[in-house]
Image 1 (cartoon, one colour):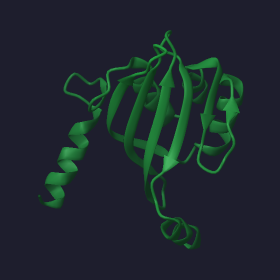
Image 2 (cartoon, rainbow, N blue to C red):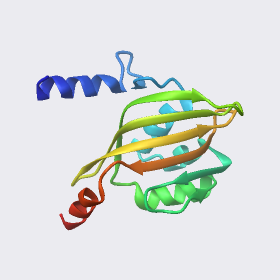
Image 3 (cartoon, one colour):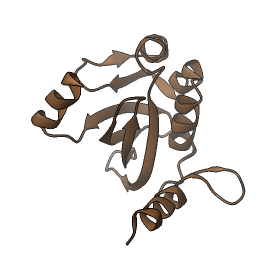
Length: 148
């Protein structure tokens, strides 16, 4: 596969589909699609509103932020220059009627891109109960990024 073919495949798996709606391969949960849409648009209050009142966001290298207000404040401070590029995901129904969703992709900044795994737990009301953001880079790769 050439680089151009890979780029075309990647663009076809995430982003907008032919009807102009946001799309991630393997994901149909509206709250997850809206999470990435609002995050990339810088609409952090709308992103945080997708969380349950006791929902928790676990960003890389941070302890959890609990509740929509704390999550919105964190995103306003830390996510302004980051764009999420989700590629594809998988959904699993858990025993307690919650839904676990894993989304693989990249987090992009003006100076680098890092592979990321987003792990979401949705409650029965389709609210985000938990979001864990894991960087998929070796310690050496992360140290090299800090030097640049």
